[in-house]
Length: 474
Image (cartoon, rainbow, N blue to C red):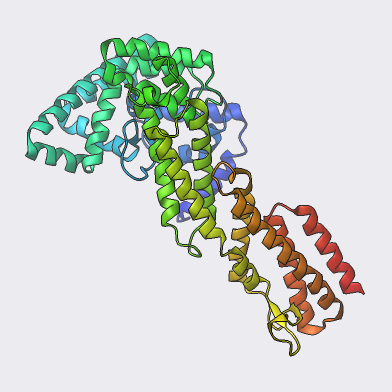
């Protein structure tokens, strides 16, 4: 019996597994999962599989390596809709990953206490025997049975307040209850969802005409019998798109229109609403940010997402400025632009604090200035200014469609002008400074070079460092 800590064992195991060749990784994973399905004990499955998962994730191809157990088979139809966590209000077409085990437990313990264990055993047996036809039939029965059971339970809970409260407690609240309802909807059209997965790549860089046509065909097949459920076909596709706004190409194809007024009134308007809701949520977060107390890297990520969605939205359909969608998009852009301007207005002040000047002589405010080398750099101020400069550099390529280009350009010019003036005078001080003043001057010069790098100006940073080396030797 070893007393070595679990963390140390896991680390050593991961290091060993990382050295295995790809064929051995696949063979080991497959063998472990088959033994796990058989119920063999005495093997630390989860510990070994957790070390293999990063390696398995690197394999190319549509299908996840390994042998799906009953739970994974249960999740397959709605796996494209799963999210790790919900941001803001819950929306249609998104299922929290946290709800999966709650729904599975609900089925196992209350809704299908006799049938689900039997279906699970059949799936395991057919998986181990390699009988694909029997396996597909067993999985299909499980999907249909689970869908019917959840639909019936949800309908009963909606008609009975106490039953609904019990179901919500079991499923983790109202959102969990809604997740269960959507899981049932998707399971009811499982064959179409699995067909969609088989015909589309896992990540879609360009939602071209051919791919749109495939989705449209499957959507129309489902819509003929179940119009409401058919919406989950494009919802699944949307989560595979690298550019989510490209889902509007499908909407255009079905609606036979590019006009936003017509599209906003059709049954597929929900996809425009999903995009606009995310755009407006980003605008709201940006507007609520407090200048000087904002995580600028996170804000920049938000604004890049906003620009991506906004640009895609206007590229895919014809927006009228006086239409509802056009008005909402313009309002959101205005709020984001105002937030950017308000945030960047303090950047020059932060720069002065990070690279301070000291007034010399008795000439008042208009007298000569030189870098203040009495104290070394303030690392907190340096870090804040570096974040400001990363933001300035990152916002540059996308500020024009946001209507903030004038302010961004002005702030960048102010920063570059101050840096140029500071560096020239710092080099003069570096030539004659001694002791702690020289050490401080060298530290400030390295900070200034780092600021250039944060602005994407690597050449200027290298030139400044070489000028500093020359100044020290003079």
